[in-house]
Length: 116
Image: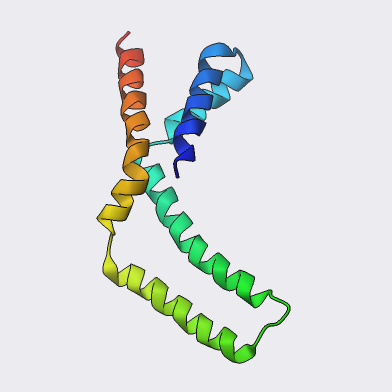
């Protein structure tokens, strides 16, 4: 998730240096990226990572049906634990809060733009 900061930096650079369609598109995308978006992106990535491991296992050439059945149960348990466990704040802070620095800067930039 550290890449979100790089994406925002690149979009900001495009917005500031380009003119025309690219600058307008970069500005539009930047306005869509907020704290809620970053948190949702983190949670979806977390869930898809679990599912991808299972998908890769199911696509292996030496698939054992008994092992696949066992793994499907493990995946369901892991997803259920995530659902019942609520938010893992330590993990969220470690992965999302560093991105929050650019979000704060983005908010400050927008305030100065609207007040100027």
